Length: 249
Image (tube, rainbow, N blue to C red; front, side, top):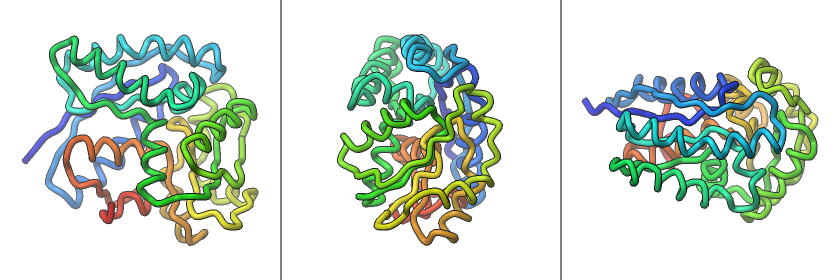
């Protein structure tokens, strides 16, 4: 039985990444033989503002070093908006920088950023026109929308919940998404991003939202997990997590 170590680079106030991503891997363990352990390193961040996000992003390299000491098999960088607030296409820069840290530490490790993973997950699903739910303030949400559109997608509509305190984001009930999504114009939309943030819980609602809307529904956490499985060279499939993880991709 193959065992893998999953490394997570986590904002200090994020409590969702270490619940949702392991939950998807654990659900995978019920249908497939591989097993997983989870190892985190934290970077300081309390309020989701551009200034705090930039300061936090600078700490990500130290986290990569620490996780590299543990010889993890893949690393996931949690904060989508931190990457997207650094400028268009920055996930490519961040992934190279973090990988270089692991190379310098003599244990080269594949890197996944939730920003890059969301973009890739949407491409894998064949998405063209999407609708997005975020917990962020409107200006940060607009930055996320611009970043996604720069990658070749049309964001038909979005909802910004305008929560700046990161622990308050984590305290949201994922089942509220079954009401929140109704605020979106879904005309012509082919994919719904139920949470563009790895701190805002959505996992419990994703399969239900797919049934309700008839659309593929995904999230930053689901896309990050999908990408981690791909980097590990294992089947990207789980018993939960919507269309992307149904085994077809």
